[in-house]
Length: 219
Image 1 (cartoon, rainbow, N blue to C red):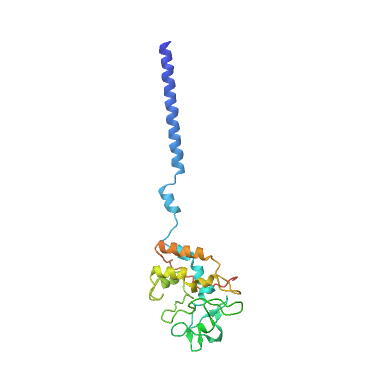
Image 2: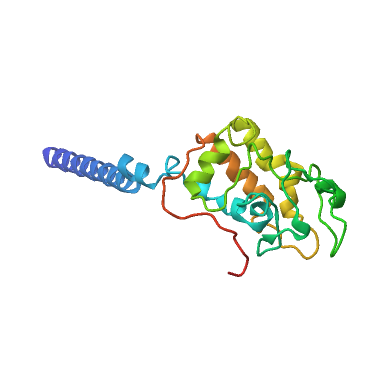
């Protein structure tokens, strides 16, 4: 009987070992199936080199609150439809208007109220030496122009990001006063996207043929 019992014990131990090994093998297989491969992970990672981070916020630059001062011509525009400024206002030698029609004649450093001139600190157009005209440009061209020190008032990338996210005149676009459509993208979101674009290398998009125009709400 003793040899028989020993055989049973040996058989039981063998079966237990096989079951344990099978369980480990099954667990490893499940883990491998759940863990994404390097190829899958690389495919799922968002691309930062195709300019997508710039196009994520370029709609702000196309909005009338921005484009009215960055459009074609030697004059500012008004309204959501981007019509030429009343009273034949012109850019002037420094972007502040000409003769008696200086920007500061009507525009103060704050909004004056309904049906009155809007205002913000340093209210002006870009100077004629660097007019920063975006109307008619593609996303790629806008991107390159705002990064070019010869076109952006000699700003480096840090200064450009500061201008876009902190300048009081730029920020006016989110608080343009009664009767004017504010920029729809929240300022915090815009600033975060601009800084994300900078951190990723400030890559510009490739040419697509899509050109900037006055982004009129509702159209």
